[in-house]
Amino acid sequence: MDELSCHGEGISFNRLASNLRGKISRVTLIRALDILAKNNIVSIERDRFHRQKKIFKLSSKIKALIDEMKVHEETTLKDPVKELTSLIHIYSNKIRETRDDVLKNYLKLRLSKLVSNIILNIM
Image 1 (cartoon, rainbow, N blue to C red):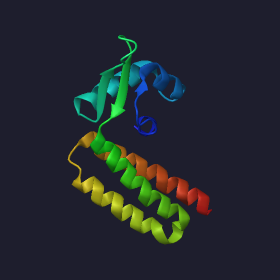
Image 2: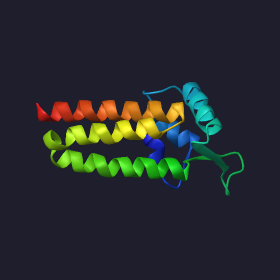
Image 3: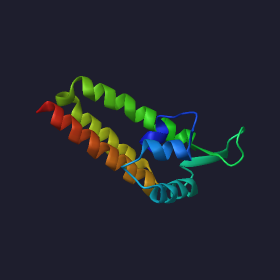
Image 4: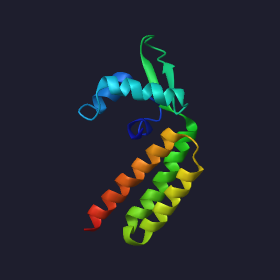
């Protein structure tokens, strides 16, 4: 979902697969996108210029959530020692508010990666 959030206008499957090459197989990516589409996290649209090509976009609700979290992450990166507990508190509140299990797991994963990176940068 991080890769999808970087492409606000949407991204084709082939470009997404090439960007994620070595991290995830194409078959696993297809399955993940299907799950995200069923949960209304990702929308699938046909390309206007190429009828077989599909464009994948994050829903506006998810984009807004990720953008909100990025703002908190940027303030934490300015002064990580003071702001780390605040960031964890904000993320835990968002996780509690979220009803979708897929989105909860994504937020937990994003928080764990962020905290890990901050701790490594402090050392």
